[in-house]
Image (cartoon, rainbow, N blue to C red; front, top):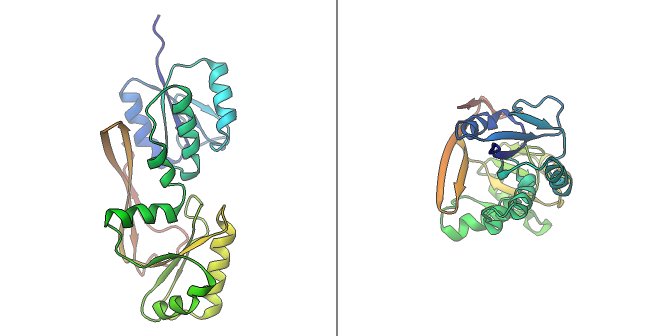
Length: 231
């Protein structure tokens, strides 16, 4: 009897519910890998493992002897695991494109090369301090870790914030980042859309899953107001 193919979902965040349901609609068994005992999305099966543990996940998959058709994640730090699974099961590989999302600096460089990046953004260095202070005299700033997930370590600074707040934000973002680097950017008011993409070579489907509002009413919240589309 032909076995049902599996798709590996790295991370059981509620934002992935729509992707999980879509994969099941296409006839896949969905295996969710998430370190939480009770993730928001459990799929058809749940393994409580670290999504960054590519070697451990591959070992467990080989032991289970599943027919694996692919892997998906919305977690930046799990991208190497997606590449490892695809390499092991001879699926489509886009390592350069996938690896670009591992750091915010590399994403910025890719956007700049494509001519679609339109705001101030630099990797922090002490030599930029006066330049950053001058920018903050006119604009809000957002300080963010270069390598992190789930919006950790981010600080939004009001116009003309004092130097202590700026240095504290830089220290917080740097300490949170896996490579101890942070980005200083002009903060843009408006709506931020999150999309997930499912693709095979050049056939790519884009699914809108959330919109986040950046405004005066949400500026000081740890997590801004979001609307989610889950199916």
